[in-house]
View 1 (cartoon, rainbow, N blue to C red):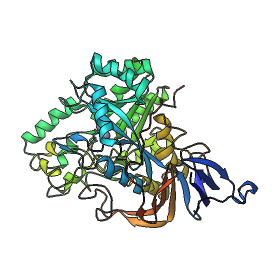
View 2 (cartoon, rainbow, N blue to C red):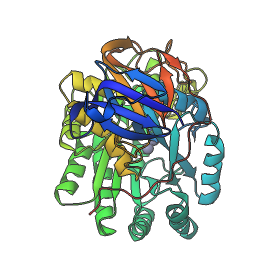
View 3 (tube, rainbow, N blue to C red):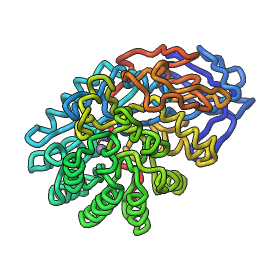
View 4 (cartoon, protein in one colour):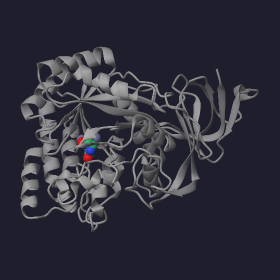
Length: 471
Ligand code: URP
Ligand code: ZN
Ligand code: ZN
């Protein structure tokens, strides 16, 4: 077994920042030493890594990705191989992707399909959530099996996309009751899809077909309303753990904050696109350029205060996690499906490579502490989805998933240099302070010195336990 000794770095955890040396033995962390500690003298490792001037953080855990997702008449363009390799470049060492079941499909078969896509192809470790697009007796029974035997302990439901993935309130309540019985978490895409479909049809009938109307037909109160409704249903189901995904709007944050203040097991994530992009700067660009930023919920107006509220929510833990909702569609041929009709643009953005950098900019700007950066991007995602302390911790016994981050470096995000399989960057030209220097996944160095030295198939499926935030 190979040993690594990471010397002279500054270890950042959710609870503090301290100079520490880290010894890795095989796939796990063996010990942490204060600099110059007597016990660390004379340690000879197979490899010494000098982390002077750098942060040593638990590898990023991105709990919301969609590699190869079939959606909107096409497929997300990153495979498990390309997407997890890009994630590694950006300092993410674990993803949780979504297996998808539509009405009429057998949940276990669909999970097997996603296993087949991922197995042997991933550069980093991975797990699965299960999307239930058709709630019925069979899929409810399948939830038991996935929790008990498959290490899949969270189930995403949709209040959006009527006729494709939407579950009505009765179906949602049934799935929540089942989740409550087995300790599972319900993840919710909270937008009022029925009302949105009416608004979309009205826009199109007025000839308002440009990408900007994607956002204007999904107004933020409809995200707030659906989020509130999901919280009420979760309460009626018996305080089932509810995790609101990809939150974009102040109204939704208010609903989550209010439920949490009442003691509910309600949690939420946001994504970098909602913290940084505005309609005015993205979707409203002329000549179909805006199509590059179509995702749901949509990017919101900079004239409102969604972004400042989301940052505040991250500071106060009303928002617990930052994920990417990585779901890339190339501009050529894929986005272009929506030329002349914004409703046909496949929804989703590519960003799995940039999350650690983009949220670190929040540290640079004084929006978040260093500890909170690590907490929202590594520690809490691991605890929320039953992976901690195997993942999300720099501690003896934890998997040696470690990122050495150089705060003195800088770089610019661009399609020319990114590693995601997408022909443009939603983040084109964004200057970033700080940069990933070295990435270690289960004790193997996979990125160093601006080179990817990992391999497909290194990543292993991770069975997960239940949410670790429940009383
Ligand atoms: O636009 C998005 N978010 N695409 C991915 C699918 C989803 O709803 O998460
Ligand atoms: Zn969603
Ligand atoms: Zn998603």
